Length: 281
Ligand code: SF4
Image (cartoon, rainbow, N blue to C red; front, side, top):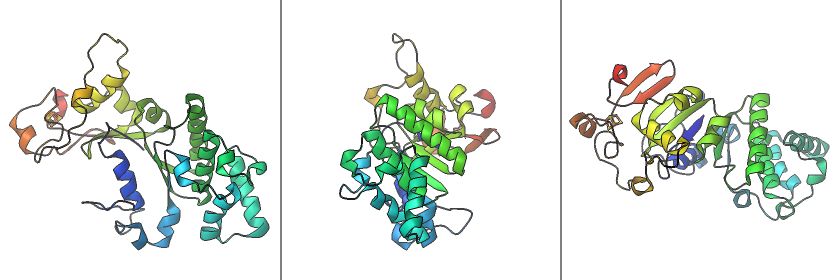
């Protein structure tokens, strides 16, 4: 599941809320149809900690510089599976091989790794817990383009091998398109459009999705952008009505100012939140 939207749309906040790092202002987080989880991670069941892992943009911020790769991988393997000794070492090597790093990386410190290798170790640590969901927060943004492609390819392979779900945040719409099956478009913390990535990218229905994708994918440099930097982030969202009302090129009228749009299903699994009747879109 990809999450896209401009800066300030709430992409990373949603990930941090799911991870229990930021309290939710409203709503519930439900995993596997169970009871809603407490908003703060300390109060969640121990099983949840294993099931949901997070990978950050900059591995330097999440890898302890004093710990070797072996020590970094040992944390989840000891905590969740009680491994030690030969079993711990064998499992660590197997996970390193999954992320295309070898046994000889075990004794290295993060300072002895390249940026791409560090992110592979961060991915390996997340997969060591054998989670159901991995929250990916701009995980390729700090990498060179060629390394980005390799890390995306690795994530794609691991997803298919393990059946893990990613909730993938990136400001790079092409990266989200490459890795996602479904995508949600956010504006001011609300979902405007959600659906299969191919459908949303090829024929966006919501006016904001259309403007966001058009702003990035417009091939002619002489054509004026549909969203400009000047109006990129509204610091104070409207208190009532549609969050996109001030910038919407297709605003209907007073209903857009007064009523929050309800969901309209365009096709199975493809939903928009907009007052424009579906037949007119
Ligand atoms: S609800 Fe109104 S303002 Fe919001 S996107 Fe639709 S037409 Fe535009």
